[in-house]
Image 1 (cartoon, rainbow, N blue to C red):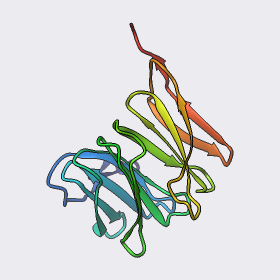
Image 2 (image 1 turned 60 degrees about the vertical axis):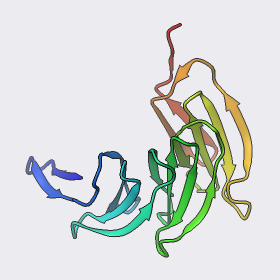
Image 3 (image 1 turned 45 degrees about the vertical axis):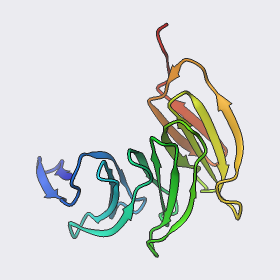
Amino acid sequence: VLIYSLSNRVVARVLTGHSKGIVSVKIHPNNEYLASISLDTTIRVWSITQGCCVRLFRAPGNLPTSIRFSNNGQLIMSTSADGNVVIHDIGSGRPIKAFRPSENSIMDAVFSMNDQMIIGYDRLGNFFFWETNEKYGTQIATVRIDRVRVAALECFKTDEVRIIGCAKLSE
């Protein structure tokens, strides 16, 4: 992982540890940490200021697809091509929930702004909505959008999800 300094226009830090290519990198809500998920099936949480790995988790499945922090910064969620979603508690380092909402690749999943819901999508255009209360991972809805390719999925308000960069696929 390279951390680039915009003000100095140089690579400020090089974080090493993954043995295979990195699939996704996300910044922690407090901007002091970042997480990376790799084809070596590990998730690493890095201290940006110290330049070292502070947590190491096992990613779900054989082909990880995305990683996200919860908005309160306490959880980290990863998804995989075999349809698995795993949520880890960053403080304890333990997985708190693992579920498989789809037989298809889960391409990405995000926490709602209030961390009460998880929204994800698979490679076929199915969108899944899960609760994050005591029934963690309970699916509450599925929406199908045919013939689209999703570029990004983000939550903007506690009650609003926006699908960004959808494009109708050619026939």
